[in-house]
Image (cartoon, rainbow over all chains, first blue to last red; front, side):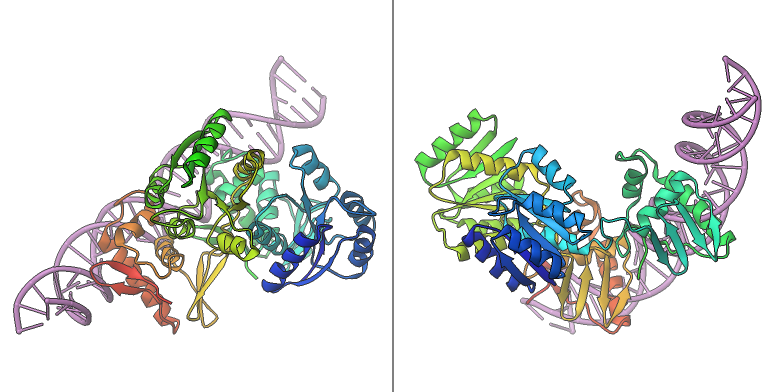
Length: 223
Length: 223
DNA sequence: GATATACTTAAGAACAGCTTAAGATTGTCT
DNA sequence: AGACAATCTTAAGCTGTTCTTAAGTATATC
């Protein structure tokens, strides 16, 4: 698991490097912005931990340049600023997560793991295929045996949420939130009804929706 | 916003207490470790500011005990030592942040705010392996010899509680509370039945649950 | 070996999830 | 605005699973 650490404080850089190496990561590090950029573009890293304050090129500019070059390595920004507008600016520039100094090493570790776990990259993937059932995120449709399956908006959102969260248990509450944007706006029974309908439609087309019920816990797509 | 301040120096304790109260926090304070522990377990605090050097129980031990009791109140450690290994030790024991004496009051303030703001991420371990039996906290499942063992919700919760409290005797009452969230909602016999079933299921998969009965006291996972 | 404690099993009660259909809501078209 | 279609929500019945209880069996400790 290759990590690039870009941080200009020598002591912090050193302690993070050793900490991450102890956890089994392969770590390259640099203090310099322009060096970091060339490393990022060529080094094939899983994650970049990027400080905003840097000599030669600042972190935000570096990140933007990276994204303009269609590089979608996941980036975790480090910053001394905690103002919400800075956070927003960082995320708009294409950061995947944001951590404010001072932070605990454990928190950095936790966030790195969560970034690495996120199977799907931020950049526009447009199709997800699972066992011959294809979800087209652009066309908002499901395909199976070359037949298009028409889903209603809520049915689609349920399937989308499941397809983008493989190997994770997704609770009914989470699906509800994904549908409406608010907590608990859509009842559990309503979700059951939508899912039931979506399953039926795929069955009619000769397929089977790979969404499995983990009774008592939620739903899951595995493998 | 309730804060528990644990600090044995009377003058520092007094000045921090008044300072925090002026900032609008509700502050309880104590100089004694064992008193602090009982307060922490019952007082429902948002944050605990904890000095390491204390009479009766030291801060690290206190913190570990707290975490063993599944209490995940955020903890900011105070220490006179600045050596990185002390910092690491504190964070490993379950601290959320670490501050070295001497510190400015503004810095304490800033860190408290940052602790309160962030959703506690410390609990992000997702797998626990004991003697070849792996508990997956994400997938809510148990693995053994590469076979998945499906547990019912209550069986899972019992195993989870035991796996996250190694080297500690866990009473039936505690398991009951972990299952239901309330005191004494699930009978002892019911827990025995669930545990029996979980043990049977692992045996069928060719393994053995490492949960041992401490007759008269409760259950324990050792080593 | 007696006794208390823990384990196992089986049966009924309670519950979670699925399905269907009916009523409510929303949006669109004339 | 009113009518119509599509979609969403809710309720009710059904099924299979899980939980609890209780009675019988096993086991540790004295």
